[in-house]
Length: 338
Image (cartoon, rainbow, N blue to C red; front, side, top):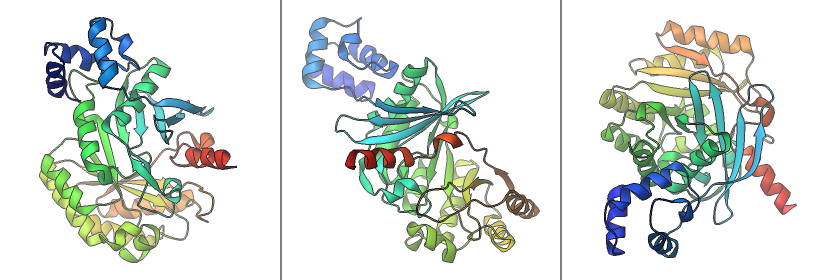
């Protein structure tokens, strides 16, 4: 809840509105119970216990990379559903990659989350609680947030917009929009809606192919919104916000990594303020996909640069703990059902 909503609720409980600011600050400090709110009266705490609950992301499992200290979490919520989140340590601070849904409807063939199907959307508070649990567990402050964990953020649009407003609130975690990235597989109407909000976040578009033929094979969403339609929305977004778009491109050996693919991609992205992030595809069991060779990726980058498009190969973090989302939850579900 926002402070003004808390004030209205507290007024209905017969409490002064200034209490709302105190409660809001406590909630965003990551408390797990109303009893921890030591500067409000016992009577009010009892009213809150009666009428409200605090969303909590409980750590079920935690893996730490021996290579780079990346941490992968499996969190559970009140209903027993689980999601994954990853905490990455950089020289400029801590970045958390969080989930927005339990599972995903999009069905991308190279993604472990999509293979598990969709359960439900996360609330704004469940997204916040992932950050708060990681901060508390490590005694740190998270400075950057990536909505690139389990789920498609734009398929949970209203809750995600509420989360963005809450996480950037100056009385809350106060993480500025320029420190937040939102990743989408390309729900075109929502990209237009997001563009019109003119938020200063970074939009990451999971493109992964230069044309409809390849993209429709790997990403079912493309059968609804083709590459041309998606890139038209991306142009609108960058024109409207002035923000550079990051195009995510999973490099899959023999599928989308040829020089011809690079040339076609370069031609399509011309005129968009863009950066291409090449991602060596994850070895997800059952897909048969293998990551492209380094020399193939280097050739791909050179061709894109010839079109005036910057491209880099994403550094792999947490490779020894399967840090990409979906795999830990699937393993946990298999263990439970087994």
